[in-house]
Image (cartoon, rainbow, N blue to C red; front, side):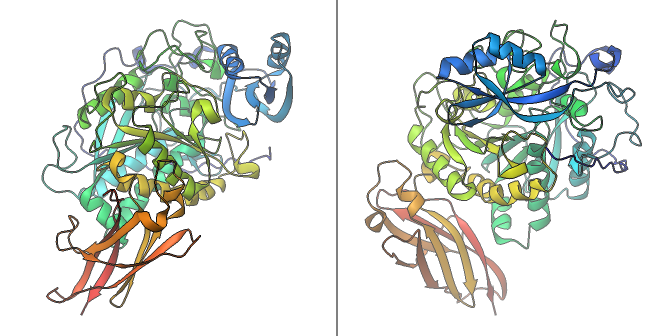
Length: 564
């Protein structure tokens, strides 16, 4: 791994935006907001390695997760484990063939002074680290600044406290505010998309996707047609850092640490970056299954009981406040018109994962979830499927819980790339953030546009782009991904039946576009002369969608048309 230059910037104090707090989960925070690391000595200079481990099937993955730090990544039958030299010896003793694929850095050393401070001095806790990645303080300052400066587009809530009590767990709701928007209840007029990142602290690029998505939405309203149409119709809820205590550990020292979990000692005698509970193994949906450990010092430690962690409780409470329960559990599917979508972003396997993640069993909504996965892959190019199929089974995760308990469509993106931006590099150069962002902004926009009915609109043709030149509207409709999404369609040539546009987002008064299909082409072109008679002079949004012969409409795409 190339040596990275750590850059610290001076934090700017930001006055907190007024916000209504959620009820604080019971038991939140340690007395005095002190992290257990305060009393621990500095570690020695031992190196950490990534071991490539040959496996023979799911049982090996579970065995590795029980006793080792099994990291996100897979190459054929090789899985990857992080640890020191002693871990290599233990792998061999357990019967695994392993070789060092990467040498990371010295183990975490207690930097002293900054960890566990109830009220950290902003002059000593910078907004960024490691070339530009944002600290917990940096994410906090950003969310509060956006909520304060753009009240017509953003509203911040506090879901609860982190384990140490040092940080509020913040969520930002973004929409074009009208009466009743962004309220903490389920009977609202706009559908909701939920983005959460940085639940695993060491996956430092994940939180940057939330940071950039917040800015893309709030800075582009009124100029970008897609963003404007989206914020007029949809609420986007964003949790940039679900594990701020853990991120504090990662961000301190000469290079980032491998802290994955929160900072709850949970009765263990762990030290350094082995302290904590894995928040993505702590949820009560299939808690205690594959790829979890009962060892408090293991990086997949599931916690003392289901939903034990305050961060878990705060997130679940938030989902229950803003999403309707739309699935009865068991093997019953969520209805086709169920609303809402939840996306979790991790690193660095370069994958799109759909439920179930706990076992290689399809969900009752498998058909539309596979169609969603196919569209995600068409944008970012990542390998796509259920975790047990393409990575390894993982129980007690966030997206399984929100689908299981509420019926909300969900998925996980594992950011990835090539060279230093891929492999098992949890701490890539900050320049990789731009690579991840360009690959996944279209995915974020696609998923957000589907939030009104993801199980239904995922089965319809996807209008990937719409542009107006003068009065000529040209739309590009994805045919290849739509055809190959493994959902039992006819050939696209006879399946894509209608493309239409309207000035009303409900498509009242819709008019048809002429569709041109070319054999073997990945896109169909649809054109129309926009009828502007009776429209006031100025710029207007025009909405475009397409339908198949089964009556499935895909998500809506928007463009500007200027009259007069």
